[in-house]
Amino acid sequence: MVLIRFLLALPRAAWRLLRVLLHVLWGLLILAFLFDRLDTAGRHARIGAWSAGLLRALGLRLQVHGQARAGAGLLVANHVSWLDIAALHSACPRARFVSKADVLQWPLLGWMIRQGGTLFIQRERKRDAMRVVHEMAAAIGQGDLVAVFPEGTTGPGHPVLPFHGNLLQAAIAVAAPIQPVALRYHQPGQAFAEAARYIGDTTLLGSLACILMASGLTVEVDFLSPQASAHADRRSLAEALRGQLEAALETRAQAG
Image (cartoon, rainbow, N blue to C red; front, side, top):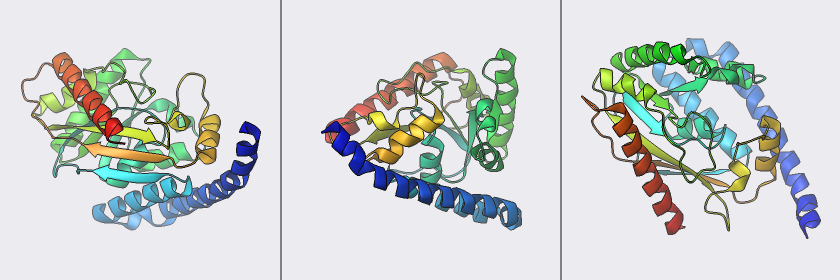
């Protein structure tokens, strides 16, 4: 039975892969010849449309609950997959992400992520976090919406891994609101889809293969209520935000 399901999924996976390759090529052409000519609103529109198109090409359905607040601030999300940025950009294309510098080594995608205004951190260097905090605070102070994954690495989707509070200091320093965002990948029979997990020894290609083969995979983006950060203790704030995301994920999973 497993072998039969695998063989039946191969044509679907091959078709999706072709669509993904063409979509990535289209994105590269936009970045190379059009992106620099667009104003901020035009760039955001392109980022949102391309990200949503990538999810569709991979066979994912997108569900969005709520929306990002207007203006500057910090988005805080749980981290499940390399697709998290595309999912969040589909729902909020103006977000600027803080990402591990490792993604710069990804073929093609690394360059594309850089072009989207991403801030990069070298997590193995503790002092680099302070540099990124200053860059984040400056960006928020200039009106940007910055997004971070405080777990520092990808997790299974549920439970949410412990949060590191260092990057939250950027919002605290400029008294910017923080909005938690719960990300959940699910498919029939699995409230937290195993196919979307990018953990352990899973490689990027291995993860891509699992997603291409998956059936009925959905990514859910749930914007929770923003909260003030002025004068907050970053460790207590990190734990409170993690608790809110845990509760939201459990509620959505129980709802089906």
